[in-house]
Amino acid sequence: MSELTAKLTATTLRCLGTEAYADGRTVRSSLYTVTIIRGCTGVHQIVMFASGVIAFPSSVRAKVLGILWGIVATLLVTQVRVVSLCYVGRFFPVHFEFAHMVFWQSLVVIITVFLWTVWAVRLTEEHDPNGP
Image 1 (cartoon, rainbow, N blue to C red):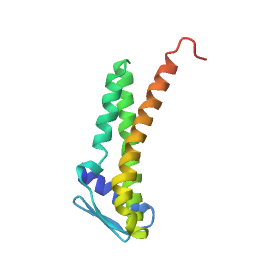
Image 2: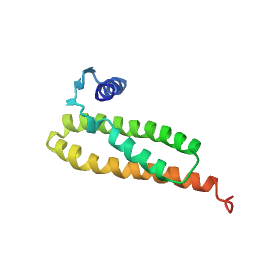
Image 3: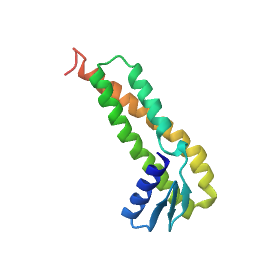
Image 4: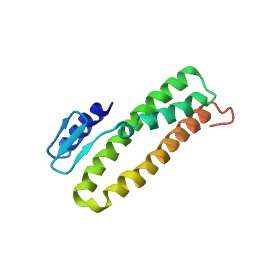
């Protein structure tokens, strides 16, 4: 998963006009070089989201669709995270560790809980007999 994340990140950076390529788990770009480890792939957030979906009372179909939606959303958030860290590393290197270890670590958990809440509320609204 680390190598896939690195490839996707390099592709995203190239789409944004930056020279970049993936070398295994490492993304080398004209902005900054980062190495993707398991904690940077979104896997932990996917597991957290899927656990919430599985625990929520809903049909198997709703769970499967919810997990698929959550995987896509989490991978998009992961891309934003890693790409933004390349920019932070280039333009604000003194803030890289804070952005990496505090800001984004906290934000991805908050976003994951928010995504699960959106899924659960939409599912509840679809099955609410008093709804519109």
